Image (cartoon, rainbow, N blue to C red; front, top):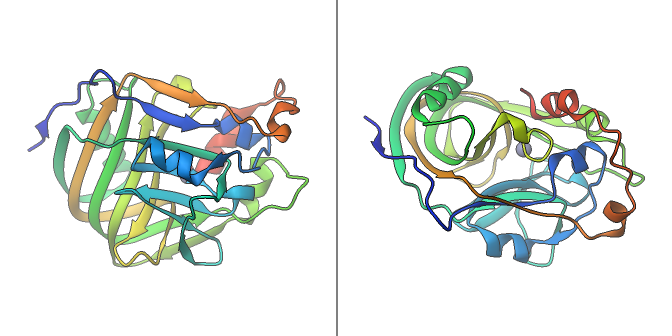
Length: 244
Ligand SMILES: [Zn+2]
């Protein structure tokens, strides 16, 4: 049975660094220090400088899962082009078992009071199958995200136990954030992870917190300040890149 409730609390919010349409436009220059991102939250997702890997922030530990298969701790002075984080204090938890990715999403949608708020999710579980992707480090001048993700590495493993972290966001935030689910995975050994594309969950626990506040920090690097961002047809590109 679900326990707790999912009412947003005053003073709590999602903190996002840059926005997804900036990535769609190829703005992969790391604009924020990992230290600044870590100071804003202890759970979240993001990507590496030059799109070099998928960032997982869980329990305050920040790692990058790179396309060469390595998982590395992120140094405080590393630069990040995009991150979305929260200070995670879950108000709700639910035991889950025997769910494919679509069934998992349907279940979460049935549990949340509204699709028009942000929710952070932490899913500690065992899986029969987990498919992740890692973006590949790009070379300047950067191509847009739709092209860049054609290089991405996709990996499927069988039995694995670990933690998925990420967000469910309102559809109208597509382009600023990611509509619906955006989850990253790190296994318990800390040696395998990435941006979640598909899975079969055996059993585990979902914890969640809801937010009605969304704080967006814009990049101040020259590549962003000089970019032409008035002609982005992002929705299809984001859906292609995020695997939804
Ligand atoms: Zn991702």
